[in-house]
Image 1 (cartoon, rainbow, N blue to C red):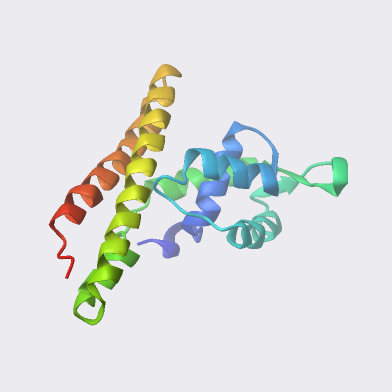
Image 2: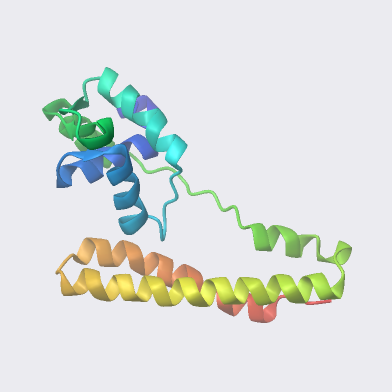
Length: 173
C-alpha cells in the first residue's frame, strides 16, 4: 500500500488537506500545520517548501497571484482534491516511534546519574507543558465543534500522559 496508490507522501497529503480551508502561502501553510497538526505530526519548513513545487508540477495545486513580499498563495485543484480523497482511502501504514529520551535511557548505563536526573527532569517539564498546551487545543476544537480535530489531538494528550507515567518508572542511576 502507501506510495503505490496515490503517489502522495504524508507531508504532501497534509498540505492538500490544509488547502481545503482555502488558498495559503507556504508560510501560512507552515503556520496552519503548526497550529493544527504539530501535536501529533511534525513537518519541517524545508519539507513544506520542497513539496509545494512538486504538487504544482503535478497539477494538484495551482499558484495564485503573488501577494505582498512576492509571497505565492497555493490553491488546491479539483485533481488535488481527488488525489487527497484517494490518499485518505489508502492503508495508513505503520507509525514509527523515534523517542530521543527512550533512546538515551536505553544507554543509561553509560550516563552519569546526574545526566539521567537532568534528562528526566527536562523530559518531565517538556511533556507537562506540552500536555497542558494540547489539552487547551482539544478544548478549543470541541468548542468549535470539530470532533475530528479534537479526536486527533486526544492522541497527543494520551501520548504525553503515557510519557509522563513512563518517566516516573525510568531508572535514574
